[in-house]
Image 1 (cartoon, rainbow, N blue to C red):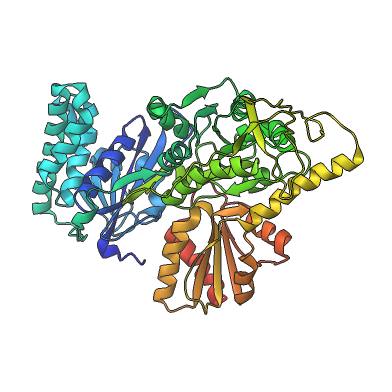
Image 2 (image 1 turned 90 degrees about the vertical axis):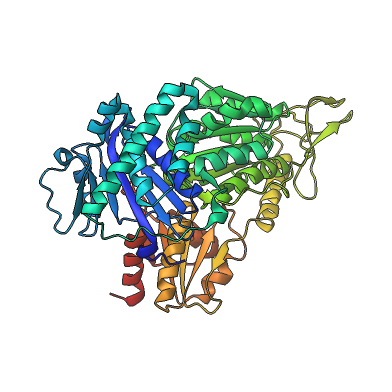
Length: 577
């Protein structure tokens, strides 16, 4: 869907860690959504607890909006470094609102500047901490939000801190609202803030990728979470920990990544549904256990939150650089499933289904999220759980039970200790059907072939790619994971210009769906879009289907594509410039 800037406003708050930008983001999006406006937010921040320069982008629209854009219509700088940090995104149409001492002699010809000293106002009220509520009052009032709605949301947010804190925040927000109303009578903005509202969305949920993955795990019957803190995955475990007691989930912050995955392996062995959440550096430490999972044919679900590497790289930035790591982690040949959610809804559904797939096929299922999707949020109508199921795949064992029985489909009946009369034996060596170590060549061959039969079944059941566009396309854009909504918005722009272009979005990146080749053969020109330096998904397509994709748009700066940036790069390829 094309987003006319007249009905789509981009707000950026920029300041230092610890200044409460995240609080403003949370409350402002909640207020604006409650008033009937569509919202999207995403944050970028430096790898430090305090200091540095961070920013949050909030898009407000009359239509569903779910992608990052470069454009800044309203900028709220909270430190002297803020303007310089986002300088490349500022245009003559940007309105800067803030303390003039933080702006300096900015070289932005045509920029509108509104002088409001948030900190000074807050200090008069009682404490500079209330500057966030002043900003909320200013921004919400720009969109003509009812004062009562602002007051209600702030009261709900701060009521546990006592009546005095609530009153101070309300006073700050109302002061901000009064001041911006007065300022606008003297200096109107060259922005259309009369964005049409949809009252039906006021009860929508605002969820981030973090929330959706965590909720998907809960809906998938997760009963044990083990993790060692690593951005951008820590928030997922923290979210589950908040509600773990309500759902009977044990959340274990372990001493390191190796112990985390081994504990989770033990949980599956005992009959629980375990979940590990980590990032590239942590996952690298887990690869020996990935092999153990492979040879013992154990289920496992892992969220791999991608960020730029190698090593520590840029721990609070985003990238799609761990596809090859997830694909080849562990030594030897054994099947696995790689899922890559591109939307909040997919993050929920794929995580929920990951537990069923792991349990059914007795393989590791790896969810490839990244910083961008984990730390982005938008409003959706609901997360339907009516059709979700949690099948029971383990069996009650009988005497003579064979854990690794050779079966026609390659899936052996999985028992758990204490459930039935059978003896359960597992071993990290090649083993016989009943779990004893062996070096018999024929049994080795049968064991490997048994495991690989499952891969063929997984291919047959693979999530199909999502196709968007006309059936008679001649240009095909390909993406996977978190670039979904960005490419979707670019596609809408291209179709406005009457290009015959379509988009193929992959939410399962291994094993690849069989239908992939059908779409590839139909296109005259294929453009693949990835956040890595080597085109890892393009390389996988070549290996799987022998199809070379010459047109690659790759970004590996640690920052997501913006809609404007990607549109420009795609047009260069389409036009042959």
